[in-house]
Image (tube, rainbow, N blue to C red):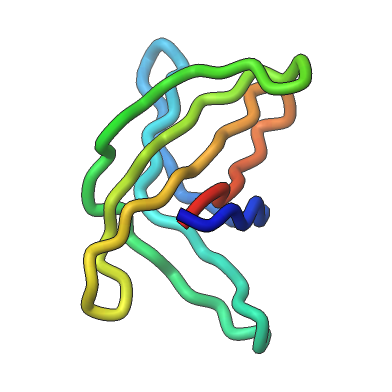
Amino acid sequence: MKVIAKAIAMVAWFDKFGNPNPIRFRIEEENADQVIIKIDRILQRAKEKLAGNHMIIFRCQSCINGTDKIYELKYELSTCKWILFKI
């Protein structure tokens, strides 16, 4: 997987305990096109503390351009930002 670390726009739902569950996200490509990617499966969910920031890491799988790809999303708890970290 290649590290991208790009901010994305996310649609997610939260359970009654405040845990996020991503549904789909939008990313802007180099040529200014916006692509919407639906999250097919969440393979793994973990918590990490990176440089003092608490984050939830999601390893997900989606069908992108006809091929199944695995990628990592990060949710920063203090700022409520979503990041496409690796793909």
